[in-house]
Each structure stands twice: as structure tokens, then as C-alpha cells.
Length: 105
Image 1 (cartoon, rainbow, N blue to C red):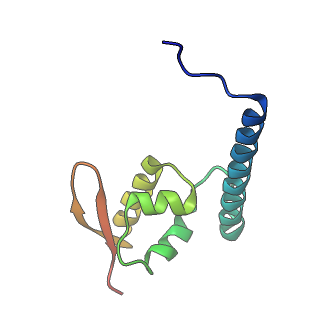
Image 2: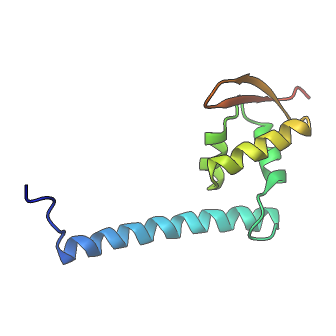
């Protein structure tokens, strides 16, 4: 009946510190990828992803999204583009996820 209680000021401060730390860590990871590829800040490092997927056994949008800190929808677009370039091959697709493998060299 009373509903959820409001957090105390110290609890809010702790939460804000944790969120700021996570965001800073994510931003540094994205900067490292951008620095490595030399691409502008708003573009996706497709060439770097192409190099990395050749070493992987299987590739899913989730793996790419978490590794490069991008959205899953953008990872799906990147994987489709790599499949068009014949860097990877679509093995299985269902309603939720596409599974790719690298092309044999």
C-alpha cells in the first residue's frame, strides 16, 4: 500500500558513482577501438570487425555488440555487410538470431 521507499542521499550518491564509472569504462573502450582503426567517431569500425571475425569460430550479433560497445541492430547490419563481402557465411537463422562462421581461406 505504501509503495517503494525513496533511497537515501548516500544511496543515490553511491548509485551515481557506479553509473559514472561504468559509462567512463564504456567510453574508454569505444575510444580504444576508434583509435586503433583511425575511423571518425560516429562510424562503425567494419574493417576491424572483419579482421576479428576471421579468428572466431562462430559469430552472432550479440558477440559483436558486446565486444565493440554498439547496439545489436547495428551489429546485425555490420554482419550482413560482411556476409555480402564474403568475409563470413550465414550458417543458421531463426526468428531471433543469425549465426555466421568465417569463410574458409
